[in-house]
Length: 343
Image (cartoon, rainbow, N blue to C red; front, side, top):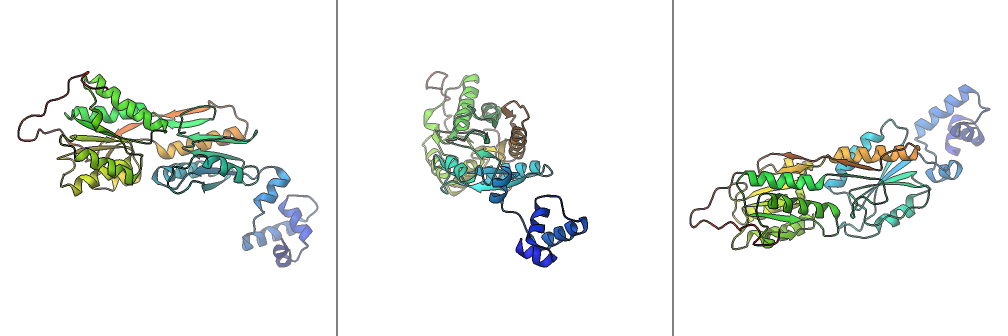
């Protein structure tokens, strides 16, 4: 404020009145001070502002790490907050590998009350908020609970993926699941199993492996599946990163996608359309999820009554990584009978 006062040729007290919208300053002086503020790039301290008004007009979006899923959500949240009078703070509070439990509690303790008026938290594991602080969860680990929540229909999406592979004639289908503690991963596996059961097919448990939704672990799991003596002819990966890793592993093993192996993912992150072949996947409306979460938060902060759970549909995006099943030359492999293994 001293810099502004000196440049504008007024007192610090006058600058303070202009900044805080108080009376007693001539309009010409107000305009001159505001012009200097604009020229100098001056902004009031969020911490000091919150002490005076108990509001910062800043909303947070908190993630464990900035990976493709969370960055797509952030794009949607950023578009939604434009023109609302709020600003958006993106904050990464995890440990770098997305596995830390309780990062949300630490992040909220740092930011709430002084820097942000509310928060959207992406895939939270544990959330405890002080009374009066609004939090919206996107795809929480344990599914919808006490928090306002935005997610997508993971179960239906997994059925879409599996039924598409079945429609292409595949029967020996592998599934690379996500983290065991994540509800969306559990629902995707459940949808896979339901589609197989509805088709009268048993799930070969050797073909269901945990990939963890990450590139490295997905690649290791894909290698396990593709080196089996009776490998799958198709793989439904629990997310696009695991699917892309599966295609990379197949390539190193001399397999061609989709001629030798069909692969389908889940999420429809931008990378899915950039790989070769382009990845067939289940689209979550990620940017819309971010926008819906931010709109829900804005309404809650503003005292607007809302349904606390928003579930968005998923859809099949057909590209080039899946093809009809063609039996390999030689003895035909038997198809497991329904009920011969747990499904």
